[in-house]
Amino acid sequence: MILKFDEIPMVHLPEFKGGEKELAANMFFDGTNRIFRGCLVPGASIGFHTHEDSCEVIHVVSGEGFLLEDGKENKVIPGDCLYCPKGCSHSLMNPADSAEDLIFLATVCQC
Image (cartoon, rainbow, N blue to C red):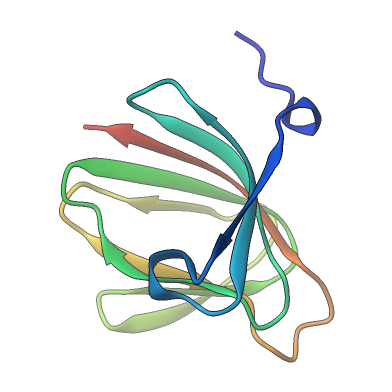
């Protein structure tokens, strides 16, 4: 299957998982797994959350931001691949003073 994100409608998820502003995403969902291209504008974030029954892989495409996991904040840049295994928690944010959107590809699947 080929997913063409430009052909998948954009959804706007305000304060996603308790974050700031909104997550804009072209999201494919097969009833079990989600594959999407996400965008966090400057000052936007995905709130800190736990993957109780799933794991997530995120690939940063453009922009820079921060990943919060295990009480540590780590800078993320294009080319970074982030992995959140089942049972772990994380948050992703684009700082308010950023010059560009944080664009990423993500897969959330049942583990």
